[in-house]
Amino acid sequence: MIVQAESEWLERRAAHEQRVCALTDEHQARAARGQKHPVYDFLFSYYAFRAAWLRRWHPGPDVVLAGERAREFLRWSEYHETSEGVMVNPSALPAHRREFVAWLRNLLEVTMERPAFFGCYGLHEWAMVYRQTPDEVRHNAYPLRFPAAELARIVEANPVRCTHFDAFRFFTAPARPLNKLQPTRETAPQHEQRGCLHANMDLYKWAFKLAPFTPSELVADCFALARDVREIDMRASPYDLRALGFAPIAIETAAGRAEYEEHQRSFANRGQPLRERLRQLCERLLAA
Image (tube, rainbow, N blue to C red; front, side, top):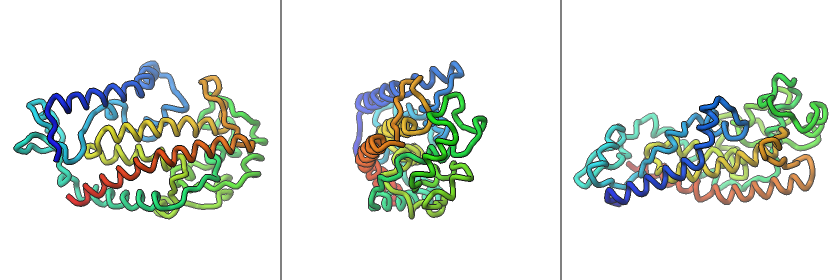
């Protein structure tokens, strides 16, 4: 165990809050104005973890917070008081959450071990608008880069191989048979691979689902990765977001596909150490 003096953990908490504010203040300002953003809102609407929760700091297991102010953490049932201070108690993890942690550990392990695939070229976003009417398009406040017929031709001319169920489930009905795989939630561990942008974005989801046991710095690291991934995800989409400052990655061209793959490889490398840290946290919780 690591015992942190009150001055140490307060400094650590302040640094985390400052970092998260820099990443989320613009989102909160937009939300206060009722203004939507097709790129960044996804990180809060789909993942449903509020910016205020992201700012909230937790030290993670095996860290004892010394000093009188540490008692404020006792408002959460997962914390307990020891002779040296206050700390999160992994033994407080309920049985139903232990089942999830065991499942997640397996998912993280198989994803780390499976070879990365870099041949999808972001066509999942195209498959989500394939043969839709303008009224059905999700971000219809922004134009598509191609007319519907040309967009459909691009999708049909390229191999669609989405390995991620939570992307595949948003494919339009006509697009689903075009996918070489038919993943389900139950078969996710059989398909998940670290070259997938959404698999790396989801590290943020797994990090906050383990809160308050997850060190908040790890949650913030995963959020920062998810934010960068989301930008590339939407730049490679069929939407024209140049008005928001996002230059398109033209995956309909060889140069665009090469650019997309370069980002994929970078995210896969960034995601691996985060995935390992999450796997180790799962091990720690299951060992309690």
